[in-house]
Length: 454
Image (cartoon, rainbow, N blue to C red; front, side):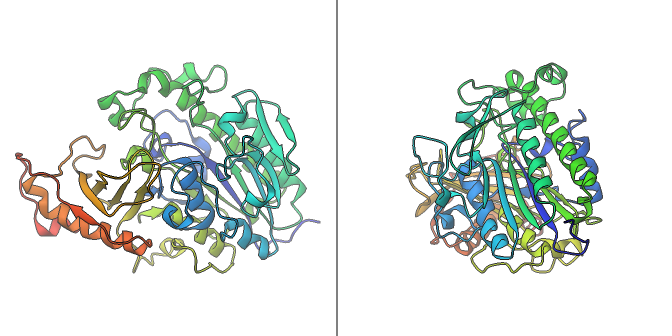
């Protein structure tokens, strides 16, 4: 039976992996990679200043499933399972009578020697078709996942299309009841054993040797080897988004369904460390985000800084459901109506793998610290940090000139350190000691106190 318009909206999370913000046309990419995302974001609500709270797969996913920071979920690195008693999106929607389904990559189960996720480790999702680490069970044209009984299922087609087809079948089966569907892709993440970004056949050639983001052009890394394939993957994801939305329209569900698009983290192509993420730079933490459907259509461009932990409470609020007190994020729906009073002026980022680090970003300033004695991947946090970087994003949007230690910017660093400490304590961390970076000489003018707060 078809639901009547006005009932609780369906919710679909279209979740990509390792996608930079500037892969979209609205994010400044000139290659027309994302015509569907751009069109739908303009119809609905676009969040151009949206940032992950943890730039690595498992921790970011724990934040998105719970609305908590990774030090609260306990999943501060890959390989740690989400607690069975965690209050999750699926649990909240399920208790409200929604059918819940998960398709694709999970990355929140314990290591079992298999990527079939046991029922008790699925975050409360009722219907299941996925794998814990999809990059290990599948290849671009061989999508192996597991159903709710733990049985292998081999899906036909390129991996993006295979998961999208499964999502369309899910929507068709459950069109008569309110549902939450979490559709989690691997793309445009690299294929681990190949150290490559394999797009559909013929797509790499479309984009190799064309536009290069300025930070990658300046810093090199593996950019020229991998960017063409990466962009090809992004294009196919956008085509999949269009197909899914076409399916919703054909079933008469397009105006009854909230669709939220985002990614777990970005990709810096070995320019900031020896791999592709796990840094506080915008290339790792700045990701695309938009939502459309009931409550979001006509929302326009939201200029506030929004974190990944803010998305779960927002989706609950959009469905008219209560937001549990365990969630540390907050709904950004008031920002759609110009109600910005009390909204944070910065986003907070934790890093606990490859390094133990913390960062805050305002519109203008980016400030980061790292623990010199912290064991990345072993310690969720530290008692002592040392200043690592400070960037003036107005003058240096691609973070190429580190200002930390300059006398001209010591007041900025001091103010940003205070902001960072406040955000760490608010996230449940003990207040650490932050040591100033060694002083450096430089030709920068002294920044005025008024500019420090911008």
